[in-house]
Length: 391
Image (cartoon, rainbow, N blue to C red):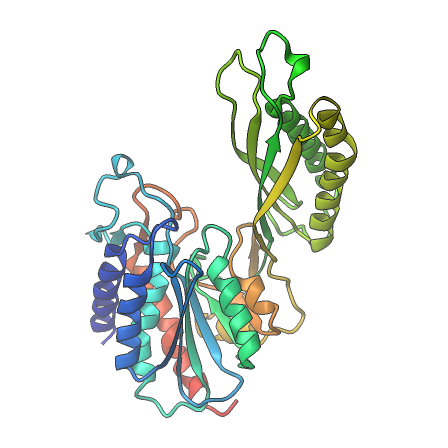
């Protein structure tokens, strides 16, 4: 029976991988396919498009129409895959030595495939507790879909009790993680000939000063290791610059520069302190210097995404449930971000647990092992007992 179910998961995963749902592209074909499967299983569906109409979330429910349900959540988008770095077509599932290769196999279409396969089983049960499936868009670029979905759940009045986020954790139970805050800060100066730099406002130079201030704050954060952060790696709030773009030529004063940066706070107070410090430095130091030469100079920070961390809670129904289903006797925390904190903001108990290793995520030749998928299926099999019991 298990080998048959695993074969079904493999077939579903092959189809999911064939949809190249890179974050900059549409996920509608995948959502349509998943909706068809879930509708055939008898699920009640809600599909919500993003403002562009090219992407969508899917929220599906089996069982009674009441509070206290369990959400199985996964994001449908994947990071880009440069074909020249892959040994195989990244959007074609390839099996080799017990591993299944393809972009998104572990992050996180393997989990989604397991869930879609199990929903057919759940549909044959006398469900006493709702089971929900949440498939979101644009997790990789700021958890945009999950933010929309959580807002819609709050407005609808639906109150699931538990969420299991199936990010790759090697099926370990993760009860906490750092937040992930992403920004683009744009510096607008004025150009001129490089031989007379004082007559222009070099956006790159002011961007460099901004980054230097970030490094000072990053050093300050390293001194904040405490009991609430000791399990993280590294055990402090981090800042880092990921990309800089600006200027036109080496002998031209750069009128524009954009800095893409992020921070991963251990605690929300660190994030607030960093934001305030950078805003003060921008308003009181950098902008006055720029406007002295060019009154229309400006510095604008765009919020790409501010995703709260998953806070470790003393009481967590999700933690106790998933530990019992997986046989785990320990939990852990991680430094990478997920959508879990958004679900927790609704008052739900949340854990992260899914097949595959985060070490494979975002890498060429990404893969998930069939053993990991089998362990995920075992967890979802065990969930049947909870769903047929009165909450």
